[in-house]
Image (tube, rainbow, N blue to C red):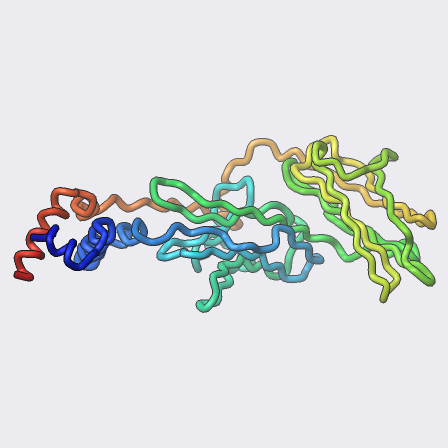
Length: 295
């Protein structure tokens, strides 16, 4: 009877199975089963690098489509302890907060009154079924206010970084009538170039309005060999430098104290209805029962 009904209504068998499954979920209130039916979530495009001056707020953006009932979690790498999960904060530092507009798909990490030690790589992640996870990284660079030691040139950046984090140093040079032609970078006297093998990226931008040429050197996954004095030199031979130290933090142990809290999140076991949901024999029985009621 059920098969004849399917043929008369021209309903594909797969969609009929989904309708029956949805009916069971509605009756049993199985939210995990609803996620199995929902489309898979995915990340939307958001900035991967954020640079702010010390003391300014920072917003690390993370946008997710098809989030459903899942929670977006933020953590700073390589630490395991989450900072934010959904709207809940897991650290005692009140400078960190979740920023979410109910009408948007963004679950951002908001950091007020940023400090130099806030620099590093942050990870936005969400858990999927079967213990799978989606992950997206955002690099935050907190720089000091530019040090003006020369009328036409100034430099700023991260003076201390932990091994494995990113080094960011920015140089701004202003000309009298027009911006400088170019800026060269040196580390302890050796010229630097963009080199993916050495994890070095050098970018530049020019402002004709302010007659300023800005250049930045970014070294990802810093090692102890990246410690030294970074010098920028303009085409007009203006030179300035700053020292950057890479700290060897060693093995990280989760601290238990005022600044960090480790919270154990227990996973809930699957309901018995989940077994019933995926049992094809029970679905067939329900189909026969539904047809019997309709007749």
